[in-house]
Length: 137
Image (cartoon, rainbow, N blue to C red; front, side):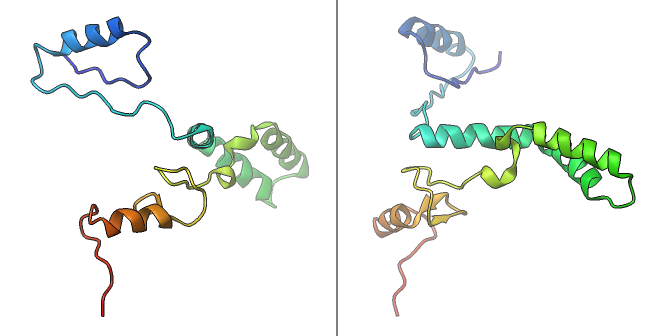
């Protein structure tokens, strides 16, 4: 029996207990995520945008190749223009923004850790990040 992971908040305590009881006999350790929600609505919106970019990426590349191909007739290129204009705006990769995983701050995010410089420094100063050490010379 496969372990079921919670992807959204449990609607009631009974559903949580039923999933817990289903997983108990087969697995010794039960994984229950601590956080179910995004930091704020901006993080949620960004996650939706990322998913939309992922879903529409192949179609957008195909249409852009048709649009930029100068060998094709203008009629076909104009049809590709119309089709790409009909796509949702959020399906463009430019609208995706890196955000801090803890505070949802959009600026000065260090991509490797997905943390803003402020949170990175606070966590690194407390020696809670392995492999990160404060510079001293």
